[in-house]
Image (cartoon, rainbow, N blue to C red; front, side, top):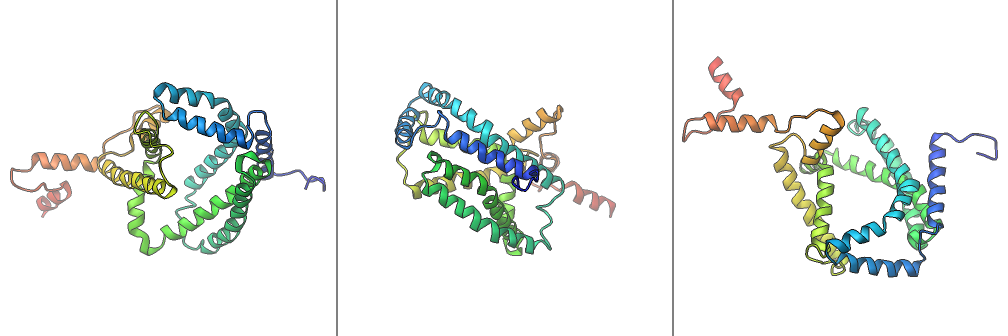
Length: 281
């Protein structure tokens, strides 16, 4: 494109900046070699098995590299995806799946081969310790993510998956609360602040732990949203961004509690709509 004298568009510029950022971070003085990285990982595990002071110190020690990665890689990528998600939500792209099956299949056919190939290159080249692997991952990960999204959309909009959608929807409405809750669960389970189980789980055992945490969150999210409009963190974030305190309790929960309080002893609570229908008849 540049050789032909054409100027790259916004999408091409974003991709080039991300790949350049990957190369910069990978070859910077902040990144250790593979052997040093393994040693640092063992030292970090020992620190995380300590108390509050050791855990906080370990996170502060890794802060410079984290900031560098956020500025050059994670920040631009996350910002682009956040903006794309905002546009998709406002235009309801993910809600109108009927008639989009050919497009979703095309995304799968392109995204999975290209994205998985980039993942293989990343893993085979040593992960973050190799510039080619990092650049391949950054360039192909959006395609793999798009293929995952297309697959989930096709599954979730199938008539036979209505029960799955109903079970997952509350957790999705409380995604930030659940994200932070997973961090708390990991803190309690794996660090010295809690049970100190870091390094004791097999891959299968860790997978089972993750499923158990998410299952608890599914139940807790459904229970919470029957009583409140938003998750606690979502409510606070909405208050902060809108500069106005939003309603917290779920109106249906308030009506149920009010009906239970006004019903005669020994009789079931009668919903407002049913009571109005009786009186109007």
